[in-house]
Amino acid sequence: MAMPEEQLVRLIADPETRAILSCLDDASAPLTVDELTHRLVERDTTVVDATTYDRELDRTALSLHHSQLPQLKEAGLVEYDADENLVSTRDDAIDPEWLTFDLIDEFLSRFAGRRSTDTDAIGVIEGAGAVYDYSRELADRAEDELFLIYRSDDLLDEGCLPHATQAMDRGVEFCVGSQNADVRQFFREHVPETTIWEPQLDWMNEPSRYPRISRLIVADRDKVMLSLRDKPVATGSKAETAMIGEGETNPLVVLVRELLGPRLDHLDYQSDHFSGELPFEL
Image (cartoon, rainbow, N blue to C red; front, side, top):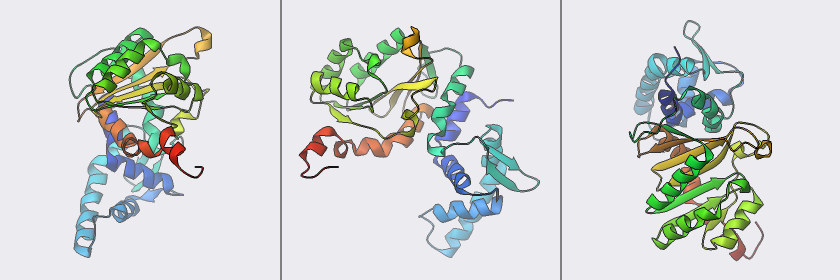
């Protein structure tokens, strides 16, 4: 039986899960559970003495054997042979830090269309119009910070600008990231107070792949909208689907916050304005 989609997102959002996948990804061959256990404990900087090390080995081994590895196998993320005591990544595994984004289209194929206010639920909204409306709603509800990533300028709409400027008038910090120069220029011209940066994100480097992430909006780090486009705009399709989550413990929010948190904290040092003030070239 397939793992429920929200359980799968929670699993991947867990830092311990990503540590396991990272260790397996770094290994040149399948690992025994004992080898994996030692590698995981050695990565933990809080383990500082022999007694703590041994205790953590026991805890990690039990957790791997009884919980984590069976769950990862069920989710299709690892190959695990309990009889042989061997575990490895699947042949089609990718960088575990960005694994979730390649799985999003798979999640969407299993989601029933819904929009829920349950803080543990991941909602789905369909259609470009509904996605635009929800984007504006997030801007209107932002209290401290509004963070956007756009893949291309075809998503830009001057009708959204008043929502951004009104948020800034309320004292909201407004940040926009894009590898597309036209997107960055749009915000420089229309909202010059914006913190603008060029993200270096692996999942934005495959322009020909569909479905693909088209935009990400994070408001106050507890509300997220992640949208996907199913085909190029040139085909005449404006089909867009977005996953939405709200609340500090929401699995989608936790996932995005875990992956982007360090970048969110250092945007000022990556922005156009900061780079332009330096007496040397970055």
